[in-house]
Image 1: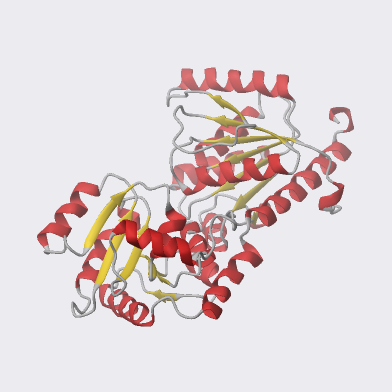
Image 2 (image 1 turned 180 degrees about the horizontal axis):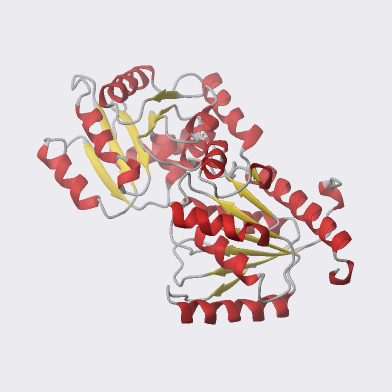
Length: 383
């Protein structure tokens, strides 16, 4: 396939298909890509299988919600509605995100002539044997599968979901202008949070769910030497909020640990923190680590899939499930603090080289254009 230069790419009509638009890494990436594509002069429509929107979408993106339920009749109805959209809008490429949207988009190619289809997996575990079987049986209906991490790609190949020559890695990206070191923001954020200058602030951001293992983080933080003033903030909502609150209370840690709930000021929190900690057992590509590095924040993380791929030496990695190792790494990070401006710059440089949304969007556009060129050669009557 001949490569297309970014400067040669004509304006495209890009259809982004997503399982939903609740708060999550994949959903936020769909919004970020839409924003980047629009800024580069392309047209974007977002097709969401489910109803409800908890994230901000760019005003110029058209949103179509299918309100699909998990019944055969409702799926058929949703497919027919999507078919009407394809025939009316004539996208140049369809890019699906997450397992349900991926399988839905593949089925869509069976009932309407579609442009090139790209399916992106965001989770290290896209599902069990039945989902991997569904991926494998429908693989021929997509032009390419991608994964956000090398670990995730290897996992899908090992599970039999996709042949190794039919899946590539393209990472997620972030807005590096929004996530950046801001000394003035650090001061105001800490004042707003009531964190004194002599208190070391530890931050965790993520859904309160078993795979994020915040219970282990609470245990590890509780074992820190109490002579060092330190406070742990956990930002995010989820089903485990009540259980985690009870754990904090039962261990007498309420004065030192705060469950913040969902937040929309993550850049401010990352600037306020002296260390960011990820305690997860399962990840795809942990974008919160990318955001932390972009803000110059030191990182301690478990060896969940995708972590080493992000950090590349810019952080401390400990074994999953090891409370003592996590405690020791946290203690060392808090003793060191945020480090020097040079160290912060090195963390940010790691992000600028690989994870800026502009660079990632350009990679996608080149891929779309190359697939479209190949499709026009194979099927000139559809061009």
